[in-house]
Image (cartoon, rainbow, N blue to C red; front, side):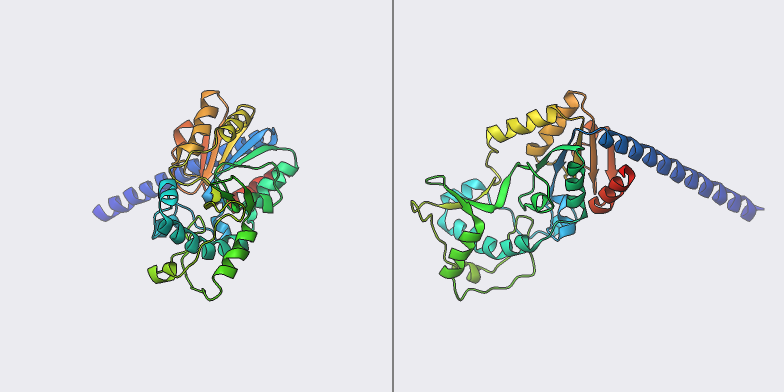
Length: 300
């Protein structure tokens, strides 16, 4: 009798769990249909983060690949105040940048570009510095944190192509060929102290000033004009669609807050929770490539 009662209780518990799972699936389906309807209405502004590029082989900062980082990112103060820190940065970046250049857009980048081509995406704001949105065919992308494909002189302000700096650094370091198995999200390769100390940097050809990648380092401010451009774009949005960002950094999170304060719907697709979940109309915990490919199919 006791065994029969126990089996009945276990069966009831299993049915309850199955029913709860079914309700969750139905609710997710309803939210996904709502997302598709909002995207179909157009005027979508995309805010993308590092999670969108992980399927291209570029690790993120705070997801599973980010947890395997072995070095803290360079800060602006450290870069400008220390020649040895600059040598360390450029040595690691010189090797790691090759990994960024070789990365190809994934299904998520291509889906965003296709949504823009269909006239549904009104603008793209990216926290990424890899250029993969543009490589996938997106246009008018606002690179919130700049791009690793450009270099800026801190002396005269001249901006140049990273390919040209790469050529100069190769010429300056003809016998420098270290190998690494670990690349960090910002194209920062892990090297030994000995490998770094033998690396030679170069300065601006025009004024002899310090060269810096045209990206916003930690501790550095995004240019105010760029921030205002993003605010204005957000205010015109019918939907702010966050893709692959934990929104931990205020530079991206502020646009979620800006949209929510103006009753502009916010939808988030990300693997794991985000800082903006409380402001979002809906959230989806899913890999970006498959999710955006499915969304494109639903809109066909």
